Image (cartoon, rainbow, N blue to C red):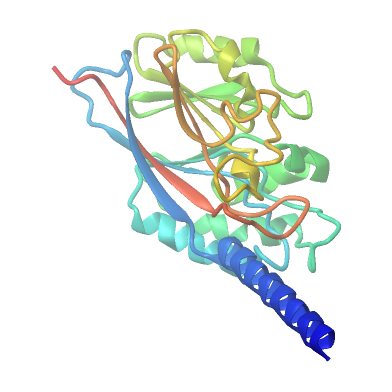
Length: 282
């Protein structure tokens, strides 16, 4: 009798533990994005130019159950409420993950982005999932909703030159072409790099003070005490999450909005980074 009662108690405790973990995972997966704020001073920022507020998004991965277009539309409204001057998206808009409950068309996945509101515009680079879906299709869909797509090319917006590196994970990055495209505005504006993967950061010139990236999801499923079993970066935890200052330069790797492979997070949350960029104060 006692052994049966003990077994029932153990089973009940196991069920409670599983339920608690499932609740934690659902909360971490579906909660509103955490808003992180930081300020980066750039040596080449034009004198007298006002700071630019950048909203950094990445890894939307529109798919069911966790990121239907309706949820992305709510996040877009939250981003607009931050009143950014510029929205930069570090790739991976679509998803074909096998465990998804619904795969949305490219048009359905991108439609909510039409509502993004930023005076300097919305700029992106492709991610690996965008290439796997078909980059011509994804690029056309992004341009249809007013998003500027950079593939190893650059654009000048206000006091900034954004160099957009195509996806490094699938072998489409070309740093030399990106940097060459940025050269036409040297001395006129501050330079920054937008890239899907942070792994290009160590190879960038020392005079590019800011890199903005995504791809890693901050591990997506992390350890409670920090770090994660997988980082999707060949540098491990080094650039896998958040702001890192190294050698007088800064890389900010956002945790993304959606999920990859499995439709859940654990001990990580969706993130939006608000990066205020300006010059050095006198």
